[in-house]
Length: 162
Image 1 (cartoon, rainbow, N blue to C red):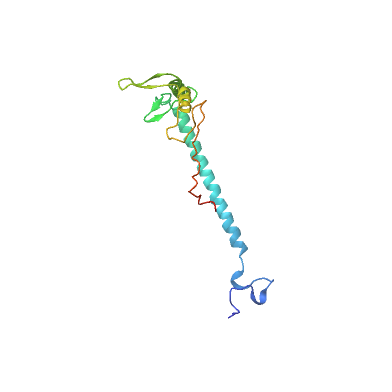
Image 2 (spheres, rainbow, N blue to C red):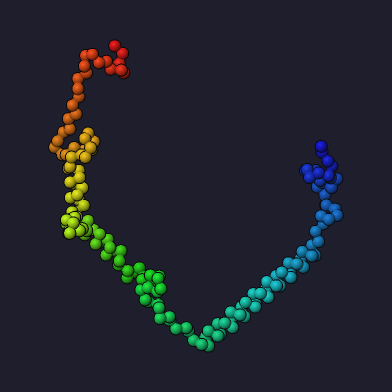
């Protein structure tokens, strides 16, 4: 089952020593490849720097670009561009919502549907009798009395033994 040339932990007669044959590394080739790579990289840096300097010279020759006319408009296309420091729509919406929740008013006058302040509505809900008999909180000042029928003499409780 074991083979002398298997991929196990045994490396043959050269354990701990220098490897022979194809395992030798040619240090000269590695250094040459590294130097050539660094030279190509340096040439790329010089080339890109010269491109940048040339482009900057073109920009400086023509002057600064004008500010687009859309800058400063509250909306460009479908994108809202209002700076947060001057946009007060959220505060206005919150104030309007708070006013609607705290005042009386008509929702639909033709149908006779009105609104009342939310605090008043919550007080009325708590003070109203429960919709389902035996459920909910009874109105303040009233105690709920649940009548209990006395056990009949002839009927035995199935949970109790006689």
